[in-house]
Length: 140
Image 1 (cartoon, rainbow, N blue to C red):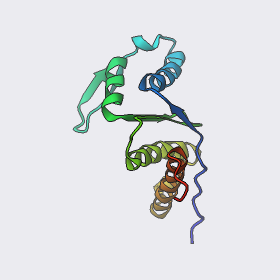
Image 2 (tube, rainbow, N blue to C red):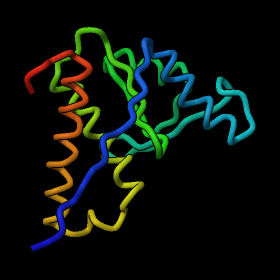
Image 3 (tube, rainbow, N blue to C red):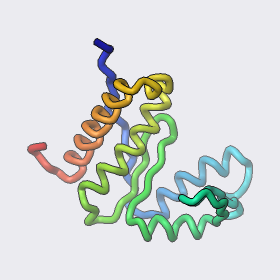
Image 4 (spheres, helix red, strand yellow):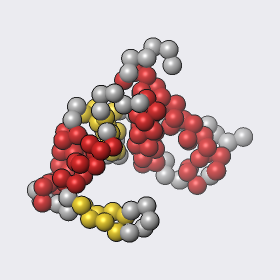
């Protein structure tokens, strides 16, 4: 029997506006790069594998379109969401970001299939508990 995978309860920083979470995200990266945040160009890959470039304004537009966004700085999870977000969307976002946080703590365990399944269960439980507290649901 394998050792139980344990995911620590995350520290979550909640943001009231998409601009606030963008400032927190870009500010840290811009400071490391030594440039102003609004001067930075971003890049990524689309679902079909095409390269894409975008600006901070494009990023902010996508946050608003999604109604939520988050990132992990390796120590904490940072989340912004619209006021009336479906609980399932918030759980998904938190689980995604908590996975990044957990992966920073123990990057080698995801390679084991059973441990990976345990990880998913632990992450979902941690995210669900955070959502219950955030939405003031007493019986989860």
